[in-house]
Length: 123
Length: 395
Image (tube, rainbow over all chains, first blue to last red; front, side, top):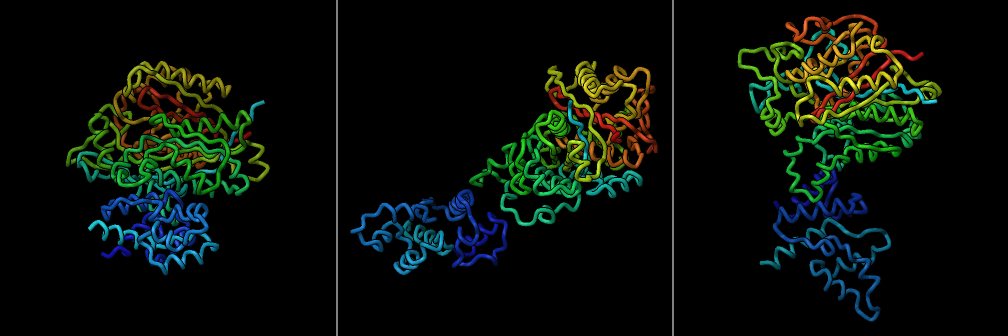
């Protein structure tokens, strides 16, 4: 099973919904109304399924708004976010920055990328 | 002056039915759902068949934290709300009293693999879910007093309405201990009715019979809507009857066995009678706890003899129909009892042939009589005693 399929199954179980309601582009908070305790469950399930330690702030972009608020205006935003979220591509970061005003930006594909990156970087 | 408290809604999910009609049909036709446990063939269990949480509650993300006992409880609340036909506005200010047990069916749920598995053992999780699902935000209390829990939840709701704290209270509970662990714990404590291969599963369990030793564990949920009388009348509610007395006490003698002198159970019922301002002779029927364990049955017989000197009320034991619902038994038996009293039926104690006492009028055939006042009794481990006095009419 690939990462996406496993994630869909986990989230469907946590939120008591059908897997068909979830795809790579689904916003976890904006579309599925996932709350902090649901993300906590997701974190524990990822840890158990993929045997990786999940840093919730990064995997679920929890500290994004904080970073945006605190960042020095002379710093390049793109580069800074790339360093903070090394699992996200440049184009995804641009997409996120353009989407900020529409609500929570976290998509399933971000979590998928986080797992992919973490598995890869650990060998 | 104290408020009067009536019952205006009943919701059940029980082994002999999920509606009033199904329960009455089962009682009239001697239908029970006793079967051999899949974990131990010498143990009889009384499960609820065809129970689908989703059919009642639809998608609910917190259901992953809910063992069957709590699912049964929550669905019984939904049915009670529907039966009482109370509006959302009334519900919001209604109070909630939930009687629950130690939840021994949770151990099959792998709660250690969830971030918030703790929710599956926190006693007020069902109360949270009920409030979350049905928007009930008044006085709130979770009561866990062993096998008296759900009867005491009704009692506490009664007291709050009586004293004017609230106009409407949803009270009841539910339980399920038919899991491997539940059966093992009961088996080890030597409290279960055991049968051999040749014995009839449906016709062996006989509370108050000299030969009966132990009970049949059951499962289910039951909730009652209690309401202040004028509030109920004003909105044209259906009124099942009136609760006129409640009391509780604790033997504190032995962690499991009741005190067979029935000293403090007697005190408990005397208190309830006094508060209800009635004489023991006005009691027409007793819905005994009637587990069928030797010590319980001896204690209850002594209790009846202590209290009822001049008159012999009908004595029945609904566990012979549904098994022992543990913390949920009081609410379940009160619900069935009220349904039967409305139809002028006093259900028999099934399979009772050789009573432990010859002078007590145990009901051994379904009896068709009008009952005005009945007592419901629950006794739990620890010597936890509780009773509620119900009047089958409202003057």
